Image (cartoon, rainbow, N blue to C red; front, side, top):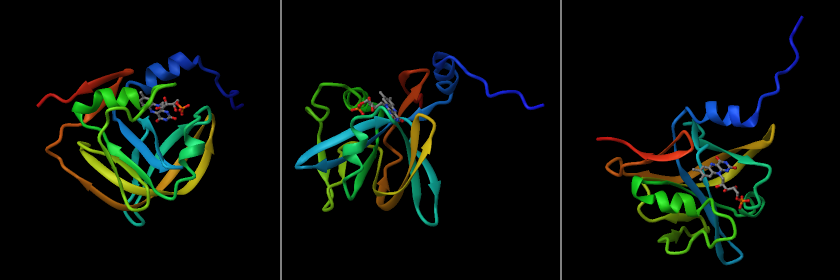
Length: 163
Ligand SMILES: Cc1cc2nc3c(=O)[nH]c(=O)nc-3n(C[C@H](O)[C@H](O)[C@H](O)COP(=O)(O)O)c2cc1C
């Protein structure tokens, strides 16, 4: 007999999921003339051919329904020096772009200056997955500088890599 699906305390799930270290990325675009964006730790590379990456977005996000209307989304892989930007881009009721240096591509993707890598993307597919959506993003342009140290997210905290 197959046992029924387990129900877990969300805190326990967060505790265990948070044991897996990740980077932090900013997904952002200009919408109606203003930059819109959010911090994500769920950024993952997916496919080389075609070039695809993914992020997972909570159904509770107010920003994602606005952001996804943009034809191009910028993904900036935050550097160790961008911890403040990482916090600010997740803040509620704040100007998420205050004092941040950013630029736009011709198609309105927003990229943060000083990021260790960036990708210009568009939404390829969105798949419902529990209380999140898995968003597949097609890559249109990209670059990275491996000399820039990344911001690391582990156990609900920001960290830096030791050299
Ligand atoms: C380090 C970090 C990583 C985050 N990663 C994600 C993520 O992968 N997916 C997500 O939906 N929200 C993530 N968030 C939360 C969003 O940045 C944002 O705070 C949330 O969507 C609520 O804002 P909103 O209602 O404007 O969307 C993360 C926040 C932080 C600080």
